[in-house]
Structures are given as C-alpha cells and as structure tokens.
Image 1 (tube, one colour):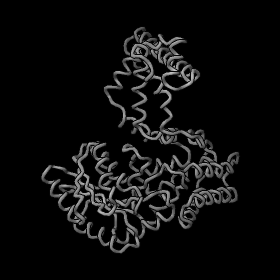
Image 2: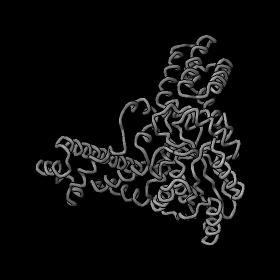
Image 3: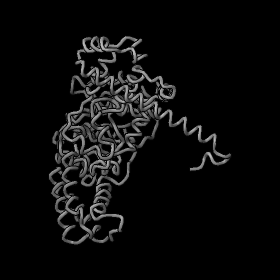
Image 4: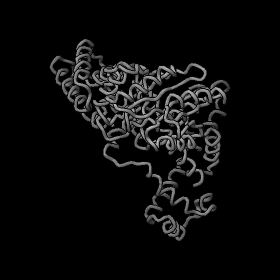
Length: 447
C-alpha cells in the first residue's frame, strides 16, 4: 500500500545526501518534496502541511552530529512526526464487563464480517471464551459467512436467521453468553451509509442498549479520503472508541491510514492485510512509520513467527538439523509454518531494505505451490532420504508434479546447498564447544 509513498520520500531525502550542513534552503526543498509525496498518497492537505511544517521547524532547530548526515537526521525527524501523526503509541481494545461486549460498525463492503472473524481468532489466541453474534439482518449471506468463519477458527456463532430485530438478537446472544460462560461477545452489525438515517438510528440504539466496552469503526483503506470523512460522520453519531483499517494489502495510496487518526482523534487499533484469519495486526504507529520510510518492521515479523511456529515442532526441527538429518518432510513442515504467518510480500516488506527490492515484483501466496507439488510427488523414502533422487527419479518427479525438469533440478540444488550450510553451522558449533573445553576454568563464558 505504501510502496509509492516510500519511493517518493526516499527521493525527497536524496536531495540532502552529500550535503554537509542543514540550511533553510536545502531543508525547505526536501520538506516541499515530502509534502508533495504525502498529498500524492492522499493524505489530507491540512494534515500534510501541518506535519511538514513541524518537520522543517524541528530540522532547523537541531544541530547535525558528526556521525549523522543531514539526510539521516531528516529521516529520523520524519519518522518521529509520522509516528505522532498516527497516534504515537499502540492502544489496546478495552475488555471489561461480564461478558465484555465489542460492537463492530462501518460502511457496506468495508470488511466488517471478515474482521469480526479475525478479531474472534485474535481474542481466542489470548485464551478468551468468545461468542460471535450475527446481527446483520439485511445482507442474506452475512449470517452464513460469519458461521463459516466461526467454523474455521473454532469459535461459536450465535444467529437467529428468521429474526429481523437486531437489538433483540443481540440481547438474546448476551443472555446465551452468560448461560454458556462466554466472557467476550463480538457483535457484527449491518453495513450502512452515513446518510441512511434509519440504519444510523439502529446502530445508535444498539450501542445505547448494549453499552459495549469497545465500539470499533471498520473502514476500507482503499476508499482514501472518503474513509476519513465517513469516519468523522460516524464518530459524531456513535462516538466510537477506535478505528480498524482493512485491505491494507490493496493497491492504493494509503493516505487514509496516515491522516485518519489526526482528523478523527480516535486511535487506529487494528490493521487487516488479507483474507486469511491470521491476517490481522495490532496497529503500532512507530512500526508503520518505519515501514513507510523503508526501515522494515523486524519486531512484527518476529511476533508473527512466535504466533505461528509450534514450539515442539521447532525443537524437533532443531534436533534434525543438529544431527544432519533434515529432509524434505521437515522442509515441507517449515513451509506450512511460514504460510501461516500471512501474505508473503507483506512479510518480506518487514525486512529492512527489502521494500525497494521487492517493489513491482508479483509475489503471491501461491509462490510455494510448485515446490510443494514436487515434494508431494516424492515417495516417503525419497522425502526421508533425498540422496536417493537420481536423474531418472527427477524425471518422474517432474512428470508427476506437472513442473519442468529444470524446476526439479533447481529445488534439489537449493535443498542440497541448504543442507551443506546447516552442516557447516553444526561444525562451527562443534568447534566452539571443543574450544570451550580447552579454555581454563572460568574463561569459557567470556567474550
């Protein structure tokens, strides 16, 4: 989403590279480019002007250290100001009451029902007993969609398909939650237009009657500044607690994500980047600012890995690597774990310096399919003992997987290189252990 903005900001900072000092002239030129980049990215004009004026004042007010170039200083200041603009720090959803009630609101087609499922999965991971409530009584497929999502994530869905009274359904659901020990109730509501008075009255009545601990407004990031204006209108009626930005993986300019917090004065609490139930992240303004400026987001990458990787499986794989017995079954298992972490291009974008490298590349979630097809065409013996795979077996694998012999050969070479690297790492570990035995007592742990 922020590819074009990142590229234009990078160009703006280049105007200061090689400059030994910060002057009013070179800062003014760079800040003008930053402002243009923000406006091109659909950031509200007043917001863009305000933030760039602050960047200019800050830049001229700071001395450049010998170890820091003017360009680096301006990047740091821009990062600080973008972080402030998007809220400064992450804000968690409020969970209180017995049961705790979370009300989901938003426009038609903004992705509310999908988000409701994702939020259910997120809360379940935290160990909460969750009940999802289908209160979209106008869209025929909404109830079925929520039930399907509930089955996917293993969370119960309360629905009354024949009932056309949203408030009655919600009250019945809360009574059911108390009866069954569900401590958190997430209420999915119908999408509405801000100009639809009847629908707005309904969501207002729901909020007043349910008194939720948290009311979230779900907004489609791809609608640009309209998203900001709609959020403002909804907030005047609902006084919601936080914003959820969906479809951040879309090909759009991203200005809404940057300016919505400033205009509405309500925190962004979650960002959604795909259709999978795992594609939901708590919003961290500092991390988003780093990603916009091409610095990556290693912390979020590590957190996703921790959530996705099974600890027992990790220990088993580690043991196989240490004994030089890593095989194609293990490799396939690792691919499955990586796929659980979310969109591949999104993951690569979290690695510092990778944003520019992957710009324009078509990387989708099907990238692993050719590899999986080849591995699944192997016999159990071939997966366990890759050295068995000779020329004739490779031809069979190519035919069985529908891939070319070149692709099979490439996979075999890459796998062989990976095993060699693992072997070398094991030798290094062995050498280190041997050296530690030779050192006098008390010296082994020193560096």
